[in-house]
Length: 409
Image (tube, rainbow, N blue to C red; front, side, top):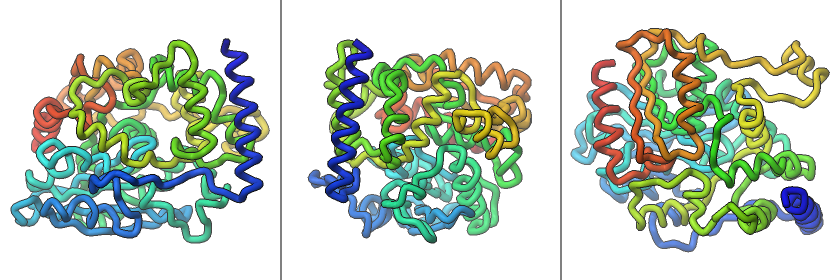
């Protein structure tokens, strides 16, 4: 069955890639038919004008340029609904894979972390990773150039995160709290393990922490990895990975026709049986355009799933690794190198298909020497991956303890 499916996929990839190349088309599209403000975002308007300001909150658009030339969009919410200026430290919110900063604004104001933090007096900054809708600029490259997509989460940790940290620090004159979800935790852990950002950091909150992925249980994600789909896409010149792209979308149809993979509820197939999502807000989330990432980034994540390690990108042979790293194998990010006195809040769920309990335990084992009063671990048995950012009760279950954590750090 797997061999037959793989053959189908390769045939589709070849035909669609050839057709796209002949037509000179890009492999992504913007399909914003829904009238909801979030799902009908215009890239020219920005997040502030489209999402935040219509709800009565002040919002500022900022940009920061990374050392490798990517121009990233940042939103600042300097006050809550009352209009009173923030009197607490800045908080930087970093989204996960295939989404952008709108993740933190997707639910109602009393259920969305960005609004809740602003109303609690924090100076809120929302980051948007390279390649997403509001961060597609570059000093010399265009998203239609394959070189624009020559990166993985290694570069997010090495360039994007330091640039946004430094910018927020310079603008506010204060050290900041950090909140990452999913891939947003991975890049933070990688940076922290190398001693980066620590001089600008008050504390870090890791929601659905990604460091080890060997026990990932999502049948959908497993199919992508086991069939080497990202590698095939890359080989055929599809360097931008977009779930709305012609090639990837057709592959999803083939994968979802495979027995054992139920895509009638795609969010569950990918993230797990989320317990606490509001159906109307889930529709908004699903209607909002999935964001692009680099195909190379998907390959890197696939490496992690296959090997169970957290290491830099593997170029596939000793010579290329030697050229990039000066050693035959990719350097490992050592989680035990994270300073034991760094305040960490780790939250994960028992139903998460992407952040498996066993993988989180491997991370926690690496943090076993962490100072007891600097590590808070919160486990919610009924929560899956999306509950932490979209759950209707996340304000009580996750965000109240998170804010209490901030207050003592």
